Amino acid sequence: MAQLDKFTEGRKPVTFVDLFASAGGISEGFMQAYTDHNYYDFVLASDINENCELTHRVRYNEQLGLDTKFITEDIMSPTFLPHLKKALGKKEIDVVTGGPSCQSFSLSGRRKRFDKRDGLFNHYLKVIRALRPKYLFTPLAA
Image 1 (spheres, rainbow, N blue to C red):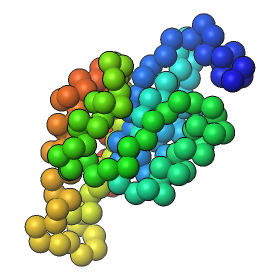
Image 2: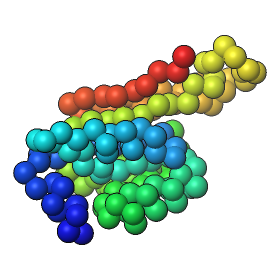
Image 3: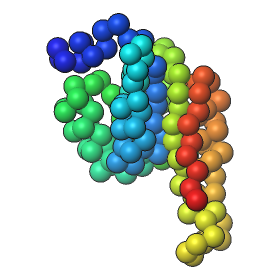
């Protein structure tokens, strides 16, 4: 895509992966945060919801012409990390973004006892340890 080539010319890519990507709010913010010298190279997104994959593929792959991969899988699945590593290949990741679900910790609404989502953050940390990014961006809910 000629527009993409012109945009990236003379800029250094900063690679990023978006976990718990949902419809792509964090991804979109990173994509728009370029400078004269850098741009964010959106390598991969992941979410458990297959509708999120459709949204990402249309926005980033079809509309913007990127080669962003998507994994529709629970981060707590024992196969998630091997699938992630395979999808990334040898690509080094500069930034990992992600907002693990906080429903099991939230003080508002009903909380389930022994909610399986209690372990999401620990699995998120496993991924971070495996990828060893230079930076981590994790927005916290109020």
